[in-house]
Length: 279
Image (tube, rainbow, N blue to C red; front, side, top):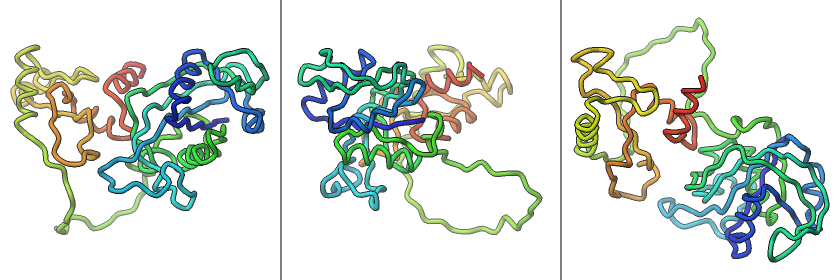
């Protein structure tokens, strides 16, 4: 079973949230006892801390972050932290002092298994709709512990950019030229060239930061200087032109670059490297 808990950025939450995370314990008032009474050991808990509307999206919806289920698409922006945990001790009652402002006696305990503390883009574009709805409901009910229906593991909460297609025997016509009008983001090619130049001068090679592929080593002279640059801070979510530093670019092979963009929110370099090494 999976549960979602939204935590606001109110003054008491700024104090209580890190205390709960550091001690692996969460509690609620008497009024919310029913929302935690069914939590069992082994359940997965997703803590979503403080969502803020992105200025690039224009004016925030009225009453944000509280939006109706019908306007679920408006529950999006940047959350300060996303922490995934596994319940180690199911629901119990205790008045032992943990938080300075209240006892929050209806509790459960957990261990953190995944955490993102540097901001995560949130919404139905990035996460499973049912997960977003559970977080929205929790936000609208002042942090109720909310079940996430039809989801059994943490990998299911993330969306996949491209659907996995089943092989089939269909054929179709392709190749007719068409014109498309679309918005793209301006890129500074000088930055990319400078990044590659710096890496070559420092290491003598352009090696993927995830899988260590060196195209010159594999393909010879035609692979010299060949690699892709990944923007660690997404261009697609910028309000306009913003400065990009060289240390905000990562050298990747084409395969690893596609894998990073395969799910939303994007994996970090270290997360993909761990996945690659584990496999």
